[in-house]
Length: 238
Ligand code: FES
Image (cartoon, rainbow, N blue to C red; front, top):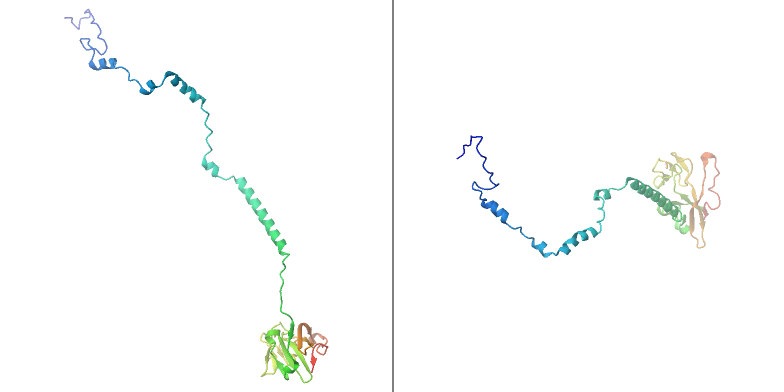
């Protein structure tokens, strides 16, 4: 037997890889070398010509369309477009408002005031003195005197309140600032500057007393005005 420490001893022959000391292959290596490759049943079933055609079909397939932009970008409005929309909305609203105002001129507001003419009935309906029968309806006091009837327009000559008839005091009294008037409507106390006006009065065809408050007779004594209380139409003789 050779000494392992002897440099002159013959080198033993190298054992093949995986071989045991006696050169016999190990059982596992023996199996790896000897095991045949597992065949792919699908590949085996596909004929070679078909297998060659698959890459060609893939190459001939149409290219996919480009992916749409992200949804977030699509939802964000363009600031310039918003500005344009707002501007046009304001312009259209302004023009529409002007057009409506233009149309409004074709429908003017008309104030239908009650008639200024009032039927006071027959002269025989009145006794001597002041009657307030038509104060609410016509704003008129009817005054009968021995020879005439006239209609006082119940509007204070100070600031336009309606004076009340006070039978107990035999005078008209304004509730606003205390002006007083005689039964003929002549001012004698308070701030009223002149007598109350009288309405136009006439008899119609049936003999009714017709008063018209749109035609008034005045006597502005404070300004030296003419006394219209004796003009035709300011009274009816009885
Ligand atoms: S309104 Fe009649 S006294 Fe002033």
